[in-house]
Length: 387
Image: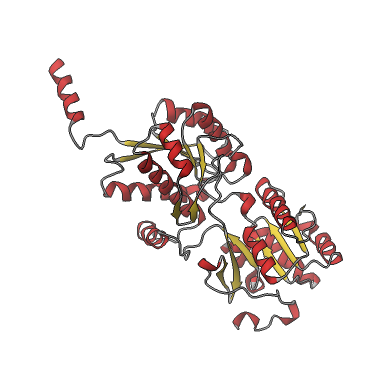
């Protein structure tokens, strides 16, 4: 028996027998969020397969431990404790969504374990004083950066700002108002809006002679606004709605989507470092186009990998220090964080529907077309989209 134990220990010490690098993550694999979170799992698998085909990371084969929170954000606390205690995960990858990330971040900070925030975008996921949580996606508060840049470049000063009544949209609208006012524009107050309140908001925008209508929310919100605009005959000089960037918006309003601007955290055409290779690999592995969830999760894996390489291992304090100072170009843009681990490098792009296609119009380095403003009146639209 003793001889067998000695043999096992000797084999473990031989070259190539290094312990696997265990990456733990919690994400919805069942429940109402499972479908939209599926691309996060696929992205992590794609990264794992690619690195293991190259011999692993720092000589260690990568293993994933993916636990199912059943689309229940509060389950993240128990499951991340399980990853730390029972699974002995070397590094933690954040869960899906801001609510679950908030719960997981509290565990990571209390247990002093590095957590890569792969999807949490609301401000409370990166609290003041955070030391072990590092955000990869652009925060919700920065969604309006491109909208402000386009409005300024077009010379529009009077802005009407509305938001869907959810934390992310409200946070984005409030931050946009702050930034616009600081830039010398006149944004008024950000107001929550539902489909029944859109005519009231149109009246308010007209009373201020607002030049630009800026909305934060979902594709359905953007579609409801378009329908109300057309029915009333209202057309601001610039119409930008966050949800207008999503494919679902086009299916909801068809040709009436033309000239609307939207906000997109990712597009497969991004000319960012490594994006073309990522898109090609995704298409080959999954026979589909990668979306924002896929690209953000894959970028989070690249950030984690770069941090581990810089730290030359997974020692918690060395890894935390490496991620704090790391700057890296990813498919979704630059990774760079502030003292609280909040992302300050990546900025969502602005797209415009032109000729029935989504074209990137900001930033200039990623643009596939030049924006077309002013937003035309409804009686001027015939043949405009084909020009």
